[in-house]
Image (tube, rainbow, N blue to C red; front, side, top):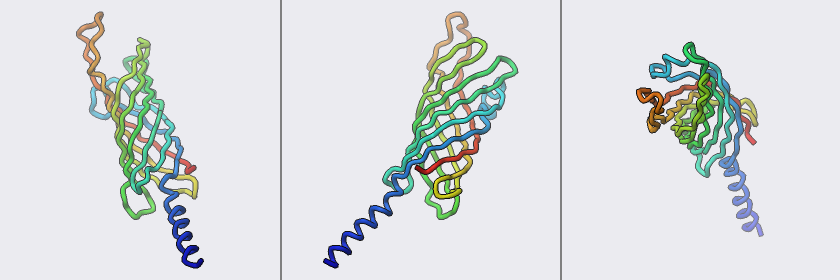
Length: 186
């Protein structure tokens, strides 16, 4: 009876210690959004504010998470009225295995971005690649706060110029976000 109870206690403790691996997080971020410095869009669009929501779940490994995110960005311009962007992506996040009170993550994923420019009112959805870095620390049992830096590569060169303007130059978009984030462990 003693042997059986010791054996079952070990199984129970293993279940408790591995429960954190499937912990879910939901969070928000807000901050500066800008065309990537030095890109062709940085001469046309200005830095503005954006924000987004994300949801994460740990994989059954200590260092890997999956993330889905959607955000909204508006880029003001001196030459046109502006650009609205709504990226949506899924990413794989690698938590660096460092024994620090601050955690660091490197993320990469794929998705699509809806772009609408004003005043022409043209809109389209384009494929995109996402990459990012994140630093966060716990601010209690259920809350983490941190800083994230995201890079979006929007692939647009597959498009053909419109018939009314065949000399129009089509370029890929490069965007950068730097934001404060808060996520909740659920």
